[in-house]
Image 1 (cartoon, rainbow, N blue to C red):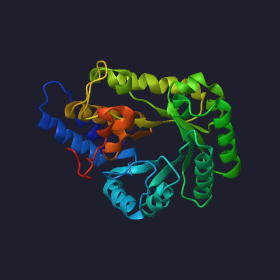
Image 2 (image 1 turned 60 degrees about the vertical axis):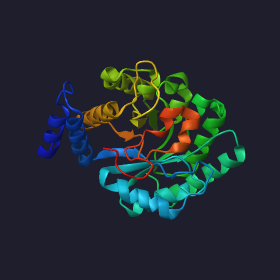
Image 3 (image 1 turned 90 degrees about the vertical axis):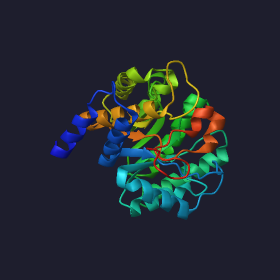
Length: 294
Protein backbone atom coordinates (compact mmCIF):
# COMPACT_ATOMS: atom_id res chain seq x y z
CA UNK A 1 0.00 0.00 0.00
CA UNK A 2 1.32 3.45 -0.84
CA UNK A 3 2.26 5.90 1.90
CA UNK A 4 -0.55 8.16 0.65
CA UNK A 5 -3.08 5.36 1.11
CA UNK A 6 -1.70 4.50 4.55
CA UNK A 7 -1.99 8.15 5.59
CA UNK A 8 -5.58 8.29 4.35
CA UNK A 9 -6.58 5.17 6.25
CA UNK A 10 -4.89 6.47 9.36
CA UNK A 11 -6.93 9.64 9.10
CA UNK A 12 -10.10 7.71 8.40
CA UNK A 13 -9.48 5.56 11.43
CA UNK A 14 -9.75 8.50 13.81
CA UNK A 15 -12.60 8.01 16.27
CA UNK A 16 -15.65 10.13 15.51
CA UNK A 17 -16.33 10.48 19.22
CA UNK A 18 -16.08 14.09 20.25
CA UNK A 19 -15.21 15.24 16.73
CA UNK A 20 -16.68 18.60 15.77
CA UNK A 21 -18.66 18.95 12.57
CA UNK A 22 -15.85 21.04 11.12
CA UNK A 23 -13.38 18.24 11.83
CA UNK A 24 -15.70 15.72 10.20
CA UNK A 25 -16.03 17.92 7.11
CA UNK A 26 -12.26 18.27 6.85
CA UNK A 27 -11.77 14.50 7.04
CA UNK A 28 -14.62 13.94 4.57
CA UNK A 29 -12.93 16.24 2.06
CA UNK A 30 -9.63 14.36 2.38
CA UNK A 31 -11.32 10.99 1.88
CA UNK A 32 -13.29 12.28 -1.11
CA UNK A 33 -10.16 13.75 -2.69
CA UNK A 34 -8.44 10.38 -2.41
CA UNK A 35 -11.06 8.96 -4.78
CA UNK A 36 -13.78 6.31 -4.89
CA UNK A 37 -13.95 3.03 -6.77
CA UNK A 38 -17.27 4.00 -8.32
CA UNK A 39 -20.36 6.19 -8.08
CA UNK A 40 -23.97 6.00 -9.21
CA UNK A 41 -24.43 8.68 -11.85
CA UNK A 42 -27.41 11.00 -11.37
CA UNK A 43 -28.22 12.59 -14.74
CA UNK A 44 -31.49 14.38 -13.96
CA UNK A 45 -31.35 18.10 -13.29
CA UNK A 46 -33.93 20.02 -11.26
CA UNK A 47 -37.37 19.61 -12.81
CA UNK A 48 -36.43 16.45 -14.72
CA UNK A 49 -37.42 12.86 -13.98
CA UNK A 50 -37.04 9.42 -15.59
CA UNK A 51 -38.77 9.43 -18.96
CA UNK A 52 -37.53 12.93 -19.77
CA UNK A 53 -34.86 13.17 -22.45
CA UNK A 54 -31.43 14.00 -21.06
CA UNK A 55 -28.90 15.79 -23.22
CA UNK A 56 -25.26 15.07 -24.00
CA UNK A 57 -24.45 18.53 -22.65
CA UNK A 58 -25.82 17.87 -19.17
CA UNK A 59 -24.20 14.42 -19.06
CA UNK A 60 -20.86 15.91 -20.05
CA UNK A 61 -21.14 18.74 -17.50
CA UNK A 62 -21.87 16.38 -14.64
CA UNK A 63 -19.25 13.82 -15.63
CA UNK A 64 -16.67 16.60 -15.71
CA UNK A 65 -17.63 17.42 -12.12
CA UNK A 66 -17.32 13.88 -10.75
CA UNK A 67 -14.46 12.43 -12.80
CA UNK A 68 -11.63 13.64 -10.51
CA UNK A 69 -13.17 11.61 -7.68
CA UNK A 70 -13.98 8.20 -9.18
CA UNK A 71 -12.65 5.45 -11.43
CA UNK A 72 -16.04 4.00 -12.45
CA UNK A 73 -19.53 5.35 -13.11
CA UNK A 74 -22.76 3.41 -13.00
CA UNK A 75 -25.66 4.29 -15.30
CA UNK A 76 -29.16 2.90 -14.81
CA UNK A 77 -30.85 2.98 -18.22
CA UNK A 78 -30.11 2.72 -21.95
CA UNK A 79 -32.93 4.92 -23.27
CA UNK A 80 -34.03 8.58 -23.28
CA UNK A 81 -30.46 9.84 -23.58
CA UNK A 82 -29.01 7.60 -20.88
CA UNK A 83 -27.43 5.52 -23.64
CA UNK A 84 -25.03 8.44 -24.19
CA UNK A 85 -23.56 8.19 -20.69
CA UNK A 86 -21.15 5.27 -21.31
CA UNK A 87 -19.69 6.77 -24.48
CA UNK A 88 -19.07 10.16 -22.86
CA UNK A 89 -17.70 8.48 -19.72
CA UNK A 90 -15.17 6.65 -21.88
CA UNK A 91 -14.05 9.97 -23.36
CA UNK A 92 -13.09 10.95 -19.80
CA UNK A 93 -11.22 7.71 -19.15
CA UNK A 94 -13.84 6.28 -16.80
CA UNK A 95 -14.88 2.64 -16.57
CA UNK A 96 -18.58 1.87 -16.88
CA UNK A 97 -21.18 -0.29 -15.19
CA UNK A 98 -24.10 0.08 -17.59
CA UNK A 99 -27.63 -0.94 -16.69
CA UNK A 100 -30.71 -1.75 -18.74
CA UNK A 101 -33.75 -0.59 -16.77
CA UNK A 102 -36.43 -3.28 -16.83
CA UNK A 103 -40.01 -2.81 -15.67
CA UNK A 104 -43.55 -3.80 -16.57
CA UNK A 105 -43.56 -2.34 -20.12
CA UNK A 106 -42.23 -5.01 -22.48
CA UNK A 107 -41.75 -2.58 -25.36
CA UNK A 108 -39.47 -0.40 -23.26
CA UNK A 109 -37.71 -3.48 -21.88
CA UNK A 110 -36.90 -4.71 -25.38
CA UNK A 111 -35.47 -1.31 -26.34
CA UNK A 112 -33.38 -1.19 -23.16
CA UNK A 113 -31.93 -4.63 -23.91
CA UNK A 114 -31.27 -3.84 -27.57
CA UNK A 115 -29.44 -0.65 -26.64
CA UNK A 116 -27.42 -2.36 -23.91
CA UNK A 117 -26.26 -4.96 -26.43
CA UNK A 118 -25.43 -2.28 -29.00
CA UNK A 119 -23.48 -0.11 -26.54
CA UNK A 120 -21.62 -3.18 -25.26
CA UNK A 121 -20.60 -4.31 -28.72
CA UNK A 122 -19.40 -0.79 -29.52
CA UNK A 123 -16.91 -1.05 -26.66
CA UNK A 124 -18.41 1.35 -24.12
CA UNK A 125 -19.37 -1.16 -21.40
CA UNK A 126 -17.10 -2.77 -18.81
CA UNK A 127 -19.88 -4.49 -16.83
CA UNK A 128 -23.42 -5.00 -18.16
CA UNK A 129 -26.30 -5.01 -15.66
CA UNK A 130 -29.56 -6.57 -16.86
CA UNK A 131 -32.18 -4.98 -14.64
CA UNK A 132 -32.21 -3.21 -11.29
CA UNK A 133 -34.30 -4.49 -8.36
CA UNK A 134 -36.97 -6.01 -10.62
CA UNK A 135 -37.40 -8.98 -8.27
CA UNK A 136 -37.68 -6.64 -5.28
CA UNK A 137 -40.34 -4.59 -7.11
CA UNK A 138 -41.95 -7.74 -8.57
CA UNK A 139 -41.97 -6.16 -12.03
CA UNK A 140 -40.88 -9.40 -13.74
CA UNK A 141 -40.94 -13.09 -12.96
CA UNK A 142 -37.72 -14.95 -12.35
CA UNK A 143 -38.12 -16.67 -15.72
CA UNK A 144 -38.63 -13.40 -17.58
CA UNK A 145 -35.51 -11.89 -16.05
CA UNK A 146 -33.43 -14.98 -16.82
CA UNK A 147 -34.57 -14.82 -20.45
CA UNK A 148 -33.37 -11.21 -20.73
CA UNK A 149 -30.08 -12.12 -19.09
CA UNK A 150 -29.49 -15.00 -21.47
CA UNK A 151 -30.26 -12.78 -24.46
CA UNK A 152 -27.60 -10.30 -23.39
CA UNK A 153 -25.04 -12.97 -22.52
CA UNK A 154 -25.52 -14.58 -25.93
CA UNK A 155 -25.13 -11.28 -27.78
CA UNK A 156 -22.02 -9.83 -26.11
CA UNK A 157 -18.68 -11.49 -25.48
CA UNK A 158 -15.85 -10.69 -23.12
CA UNK A 159 -17.98 -8.47 -20.86
CA UNK A 160 -19.26 -9.72 -17.49
CA UNK A 161 -23.05 -9.70 -17.26
CA UNK A 162 -24.84 -9.34 -13.94
CA UNK A 163 -28.04 -8.23 -12.28
CA UNK A 164 -28.55 -5.60 -9.58
CA UNK A 165 -30.74 -6.21 -6.55
CA UNK A 166 -30.81 -6.14 -2.78
CA UNK A 167 -28.20 -8.52 -1.39
CA UNK A 168 -30.81 -10.93 0.02
CA UNK A 169 -32.56 -11.43 -3.33
CA UNK A 170 -29.56 -13.48 -4.49
CA UNK A 171 -30.22 -15.82 -1.56
CA UNK A 172 -33.89 -16.06 -2.49
CA UNK A 173 -33.25 -16.59 -6.23
CA UNK A 174 -30.23 -18.89 -6.62
CA UNK A 175 -30.94 -19.41 -10.33
CA UNK A 176 -30.43 -15.68 -10.90
CA UNK A 177 -27.18 -15.75 -8.94
CA UNK A 178 -26.09 -18.73 -11.03
CA UNK A 179 -26.88 -16.87 -14.27
CA UNK A 180 -24.72 -13.89 -13.26
CA UNK A 181 -21.06 -13.57 -14.14
CA UNK A 182 -20.84 -11.01 -11.36
CA UNK A 183 -23.13 -10.31 -8.39
CA UNK A 184 -24.21 -6.67 -8.11
CA UNK A 185 -25.60 -6.25 -4.61
CA UNK A 186 -27.33 -3.19 -3.18
CA UNK A 187 -26.49 -2.84 0.53
CA UNK A 188 -28.32 -0.15 2.51
CA UNK A 189 -28.17 -0.28 6.31
CA UNK A 190 -30.27 2.90 6.31
CA UNK A 191 -33.24 1.23 4.58
CA UNK A 192 -33.22 -1.48 7.24
CA UNK A 193 -33.36 1.02 10.09
CA UNK A 194 -29.79 0.52 11.30
CA UNK A 195 -28.22 3.05 13.66
CA UNK A 196 -25.25 4.86 12.15
CA UNK A 197 -22.92 3.45 14.84
CA UNK A 198 -23.54 -0.11 13.61
CA UNK A 199 -24.00 0.64 9.92
CA UNK A 200 -20.56 -0.43 8.69
CA UNK A 201 -20.75 -3.71 10.60
CA UNK A 202 -24.19 -4.35 9.10
CA UNK A 203 -23.03 -3.51 5.57
CA UNK A 204 -20.21 -6.02 5.99
CA UNK A 205 -22.78 -8.65 6.98
CA UNK A 206 -24.87 -7.82 3.89
CA UNK A 207 -21.79 -8.13 1.68
CA UNK A 208 -20.81 -11.46 3.20
CA UNK A 209 -24.30 -12.84 2.63
CA UNK A 210 -24.06 -11.82 -1.02
CA UNK A 211 -20.65 -13.51 -1.21
CA UNK A 212 -22.12 -16.76 0.08
CA UNK A 213 -24.90 -16.60 -2.50
CA UNK A 214 -22.31 -15.85 -5.21
CA UNK A 215 -20.49 -19.16 -4.62
CA UNK A 216 -17.11 -17.85 -5.66
CA UNK A 217 -18.21 -15.31 -8.25
CA UNK A 218 -17.06 -11.70 -7.79
CA UNK A 219 -19.33 -9.47 -5.74
CA UNK A 220 -19.63 -5.71 -6.20
CA UNK A 221 -21.63 -3.41 -3.92
CA UNK A 222 -23.60 -1.67 -6.65
CA UNK A 223 -25.27 0.81 -4.30
CA UNK A 224 -24.84 2.04 -0.77
CA UNK A 225 -25.24 5.42 0.85
CA UNK A 226 -26.91 7.49 3.57
CA UNK A 227 -29.29 10.46 3.20
CA UNK A 228 -28.30 13.86 4.53
CA UNK A 229 -31.86 15.04 5.26
CA UNK A 230 -35.33 13.61 5.75
CA UNK A 231 -37.40 11.44 8.06
CA UNK A 232 -35.77 8.79 10.25
CA UNK A 233 -36.40 5.10 9.62
CA UNK A 234 -36.22 3.14 12.83
CA UNK A 235 -32.83 3.90 14.37
CA UNK A 236 -31.47 5.23 11.07
CA UNK A 237 -31.34 9.03 11.20
CA UNK A 238 -30.61 11.21 8.17
CA UNK A 239 -28.28 14.11 8.94
CA UNK A 240 -25.24 15.88 7.57
CA UNK A 241 -23.11 14.33 10.29
CA UNK A 242 -24.33 10.78 9.66
CA UNK A 243 -23.96 11.23 5.90
CA UNK A 244 -20.31 12.16 6.39
CA UNK A 245 -19.62 9.35 8.86
CA UNK A 246 -21.14 6.73 6.59
CA UNK A 247 -19.20 7.92 3.56
CA UNK A 248 -15.89 7.93 5.44
CA UNK A 249 -16.48 4.46 6.91
CA UNK A 250 -17.53 2.93 3.60
CA UNK A 251 -14.53 4.34 1.75
CA UNK A 252 -12.11 3.30 4.51
CA UNK A 253 -13.43 -0.28 4.30
CA UNK A 254 -13.31 -0.23 0.52
CA UNK A 255 -9.65 0.79 0.54
CA UNK A 256 -8.57 -1.51 3.38
CA UNK A 257 -10.18 -4.68 2.04
CA UNK A 258 -10.37 -3.93 -1.70
CA UNK A 259 -14.17 -3.94 -1.70
CA UNK A 260 -15.59 -2.57 -4.94
CA UNK A 261 -18.28 -0.06 -4.00
CA UNK A 262 -20.42 2.17 -6.20
CA UNK A 263 -21.47 4.96 -3.85
CA UNK A 264 -25.01 6.27 -4.19
CA UNK A 265 -25.17 8.83 -5.37
CA UNK A 266 -23.49 11.68 -7.22
CA UNK A 267 -26.14 14.45 -7.20
CA UNK A 268 -29.29 15.10 -5.20
CA UNK A 269 -32.41 14.54 -7.33
CA UNK A 270 -35.75 16.03 -6.29
CA UNK A 271 -37.83 13.58 -8.35
CA UNK A 272 -36.88 10.71 -6.03
CA UNK A 273 -39.11 11.94 -3.21
CA UNK A 274 -42.13 10.24 -4.79
CA UNK A 275 -40.84 6.69 -4.49
CA UNK A 276 -38.72 7.00 -1.37
CA UNK A 277 -40.33 9.72 0.74
CA UNK A 278 -38.57 12.94 1.70
CA UNK A 279 -35.17 11.27 2.12
CA UNK A 280 -35.14 10.35 -1.58
CA UNK A 281 -33.92 13.77 -2.63
CA UNK A 282 -30.81 13.84 -0.41
CA UNK A 283 -28.43 10.99 -1.25
CA UNK A 284 -25.97 12.97 -3.38
CA UNK A 285 -22.40 13.95 -2.62
CA UNK A 286 -23.28 17.06 -4.63
CA UNK A 287 -26.52 18.99 -4.19
CA UNK A 288 -29.09 19.56 -6.93
CA UNK A 289 -27.25 22.73 -7.94
CA UNK A 290 -24.14 20.59 -8.61
CA UNK A 291 -22.20 21.98 -5.64
CA UNK A 292 -20.36 19.73 -3.19
CA UNK A 293 -22.39 19.57 0.01
CA UNK A 294 -19.41 19.71 2.34
